[in-house]
Image 1 (cartoon, helix red, strand yellow):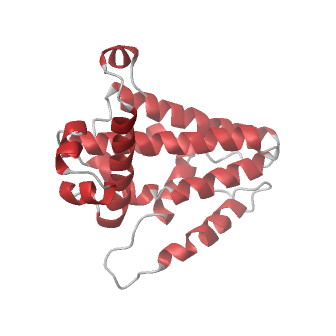
Image 2: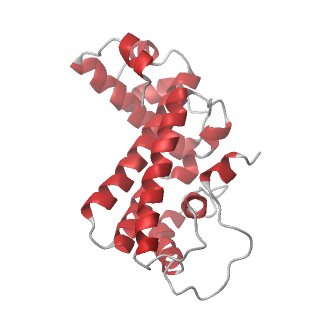
Length: 214
């Protein structure tokens, strides 16, 4: 989400330029999941079906491209949370729908982007992060009020679980684990139901707690 000043000064893109920009971001997101943050930019251009010059016209360096990918991912996940809240009448089913949709974004694979060259204090990044935080908290609040979600869970706990279950395993010997992600997420979600079957150690994790980690 751009600030008002940035929106005012950023020229409106033509339809073809906007399409190319979206194709580049989508291709970069796919390659970052597959290969990590050191993807060749010419491979991004090839995957997007555009020339190198087009890529560099939109994204003059790797840092700008990764910045836009992280904003896109946070926006897509927030969209999923808001849609689940608006469209599902059952509060826990809304939460369940969101968790599985967020897993499909492979945020665990994209987590290294947040530690490598992303300015977390950038106004756009902060605004996208706050929107995501509010959207997920709204989902969880409704499930708590309905007595469906245990009270010792916070947004950070949810995002840690999704991140860990979608983080690629090192090496190639453990390939094919992606097919089990949604199965294990379902086990995790079953553990969020009330009444709780055990007392959790420590305290509930917020997104602020996660941001303070080194």
